[in-house]
Amino acid sequence: MSDQASSVVGLLQEAVAASAQTRPAGESLLVGLIGRGIQSSRSPAMHEREATRLGIGCSYILLDFDRLDLPDEALPAVVAAAPQLGFRGFNVTHPFKQQIVPLLDALSPAAAAIGAVNTVVYAGARTSGHNTDSWGFAESFRQGLPAVRLDRVVQFGAGGAGAAVVHALVQMEAAEIAIVDVDAERARALAERMRLLSDSSIDCATDIETSLAMADGIVNTTPVGMTKYPGLPFAVELLQPRHWVAEVVYFPAETELLRRARALGCHTLAGSGMAIAQAARAFELFTGRAADLRAMAAHFEAAA
Image (cartoon, rainbow, N blue to C red):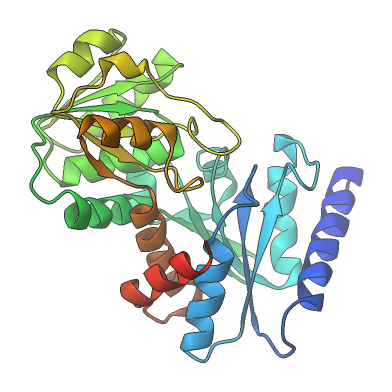
């Protein structure tokens, strides 16, 4: 075993041991979340409380690369070490949803189409990657913005969450989708891949002002607005009252983008709905038991 792998195993053992000290004895299911800057995540509360409601023992641990002081290059070692410590699986968030794909043994059809994974399940040491973000966004959108126009949508972000949301917009039959990303080549690649899946018009956009002037709605899938990355993904002067605005960020619950949009009178969709719905699907993958969306929403709010 390499020095880095040994170090990762040691850090994960410490995280598991620390978690065991604060949770009831006799728990059988060990899962977690891999990402950066995730200390405000409500995923532990949602999964553990829903498991308790269903009579399942569960411990959900945050594997925060920032808190553990791990480089991105340690991701393969974490994936390899987790089953040795008893993990049944884990969720994946920024910035690893795309980085983790080549490390896995198999992908679900949705994960393969999207090119990003937010849920990994172990069967022994074998890994399967899934994407519950796409369904989670679509379900949240259907409930929170049921009557808005989807003729022209501008999406900020072409990362892992962005790929899942474009996939969801395609499934919802959005006519035109313009993708904006600081890495224009990444946006072009995502647009090209998603055009193969639908008849929607999907392109990379670099003229943000013109794109927003023609848009019905806006989706932010970048980390901008998170507690760790405060701010706005575009100049707020370009926001119009006729726009609907959807977020995938849910900590803080109200990003600056949502606050500005609501002040203008825009219809808005918070990232909490996607967070709850994707967690419900991930819970089923981890446990084999269906989660109740209303119960998961209650767990989410109780954890605020």
